[in-house]
Image (cartoon, rainbow, N blue to C red; front, side, top):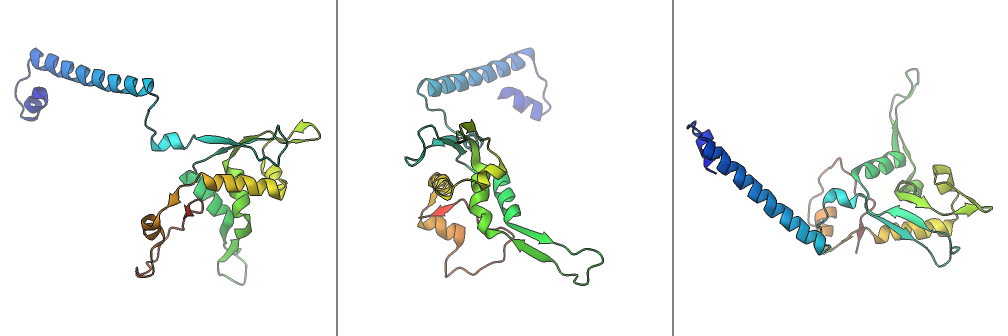
Length: 192
């Protein structure tokens, strides 16, 4: 753009330079809008990273009552990972007067599956005695095991599968030296 060059070189700018720059910008905006309209018309709007956060799926098992469905978010966020990991393992520091001054780690590894179910459910149509049961931490804990198994299985189906190269990048391989890391593997990723 002529205007940008003149401004960068501290050269005088004319009204015509400004008009030309504005016309260039407007033409580029029109081109972008035309491209977006074409994508809309073809129903091919590319999804971005943050669009995936809102993707949901409604699931139903053939073993459930006909009216029973669960809507789940299918893409976990970094916050979801942190929340589950923080629930699974906690560091406990001793009280000021305690004899043992070490740090204890409380582990709840058995709760991982339930925590993911709890975190990813958006809504459900489960009932008790003909009344709707709202989604809550306590209600998730009360789910019959076959229901929880099915929901978790479906959550896992939506997670990307890692091919062999991705697995090596993600998990490393036997010939790669182990380097200490502050990062735990993501529990919602599944390997092929």
